[in-house]
Image (cartoon, rainbow, N blue to C red; front, side, top):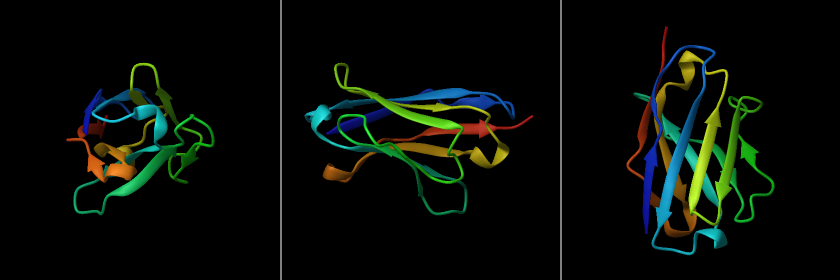
Length: 113
């Protein structure tokens, strides 16, 4: 099982970024997936999750209405569209496959003016 995130970087407050996670080594379309983030000195927290079919996405209160989680089961990709970014969104973002307890390497998102 392998998860590789990409798409992080520096964004201005109010800006947008789109994170991607390439999954391999398992039947991606069969399992729920999640995005987590970890800011310096803080615990890793759940940002959003999605079922195997893409239905019923869950969002943490801090990102609801600004972030959108989606997936492409043909290309084995997980996405996180992040809009109206805030400085408090600064963190390392991780893709997570709970069924396999596997994390990606993370991608840094920095929101600063």
